Length: 438
Image (cartoon, rainbow, N blue to C red; front, top):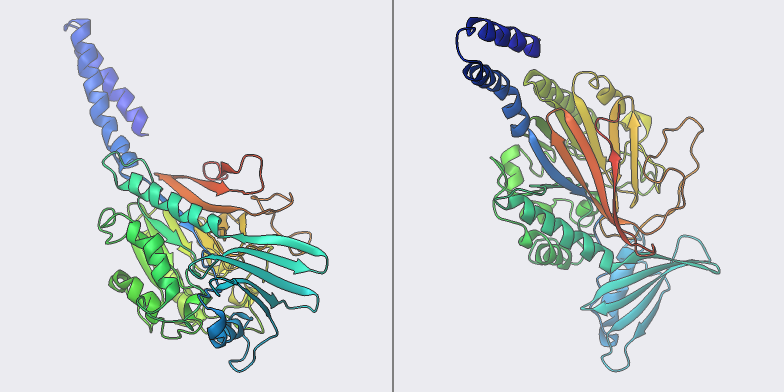
């Protein structure tokens, strides 16, 4: 209709200008067309932006211990062994450097009799490599260089986005599990995990966020941020600016608007050892958060937002690890009821894998390649389960990555930039959302 009206006005201009030289008439008509079309072009420009997404970046088993202080290593191994009771210390093997007496290698029993994890150390008490053994089979599940690659490249991208040329993403979302636990220190000052994250990533980001945003990094709580730190002392200390959006120890959710989108962050809770895929002890409860989610979506629709970006830790759809949230605690049915009113994209983590789905008009991404040990197996799913658009049935491998989401008006694309150490060409990128995936 806009173009039709423009054409009619142009025709009237040309008709009225029969006595004016043709060149002058053409200029007048052209100026009128630019004037009429400029609001639409301006709107598209204002709503063109990009942001990065990654998650599951924590590395466990910080162990700056020597042979003379093996009791500290005993405590750490007790905690790292999945939800072991504080007094139990599984049988493990430790190898110390004969010269420095510092820990060089650690072998921790796995969940089955013939399974174990071997961790090698080489830098200030931080692990370099994880090797998972099961009988005669061994597989590398973590390279510390993978986390380093993700951190360095996201920092570089955000610096580009903050430059006058504005050629990169301007802020970043994180799907949770930034640190391992609070048993070696809770606060930003006392926790080696928070100190390392700040040193190697957060402190390197550009100051001040884009537009009205006060920062460039927006995470959700993972279950590991609450493990050994039930009051999330470390998380709140590292990201005090989230309080302006309503985030607190008693309400661990928040939302904000940026350009043509609403960004929503939910808390799927701590991890229940008996049901590690379930929404458990969240703050507020699941039911309360679904009410808040519906209200936030309604407001976004009323404000004519074109996109809603939802971030939570536990995956809505996935084939890896602990699996997806159960039906009774899964927000998909609520999101589906809004899918025809606003464009919805969901980012999750928790299972240490990368996956992508399109279900009932909604995009779902599992962004689990940020640095932690990786899950390279796929669970057997029902025949009618949604297809994973990332691996597409191909064999999995180590895949460290982050996503760049580019928005231009109603259009959106998602590019995965990745480091696959075992590939002949280890560095690549792939577009997994062409346009609106229609």
